[in-house]
Image 1: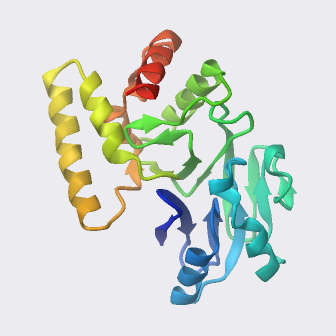
Image 2: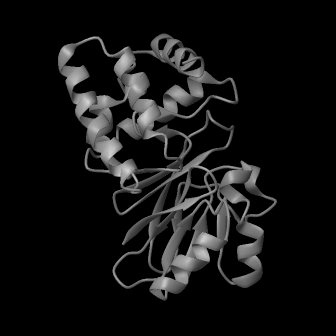
Length: 235
């Protein structure tokens, strides 16, 4: 079971359950919608994973810990004020999950992504048809983080933390140079609009789809990536 739980303005808190195991939660920006889902499906939580320190990703963690003090909360050093376990290696092994940790800096200096059972919980590094703002100013780090993600299997389910798909596709279409690419993006725009109009999430996406539509994954080199990111910042 994979559920994107809407939170705040356009965030998603991800809930993932393998078979009948306790669940993983990713980026608890606020608590109430999480509690509603846990109660609705009668779920127990095995661990919380934090991608980075921005408040819309961990604002509900302290309240969660008061109710579930036994549940470990994993994050990098930049999340040390709320995390119970600081992630320094490239693996997290809980009772039911083997989680690969990818260091994906760029949006923040110690941003982490988590790869588990062909699901990538990538926070604000990669979005559908877009990528996160480079608040660190380290464009090389962000570019290399995207290249790292790009090497994952094509059937990887990409689970970003925001519903930005429609606005990102608008930018991707404006940047597209060839008619075939424009057609592919337009088809994805229609699907995304249908889902949004129905109140449904446009996510997850797949890495295969993102390679086809995402201009930031298609950037040939760092210079092209920087030019794209600067255009998107002012789009």
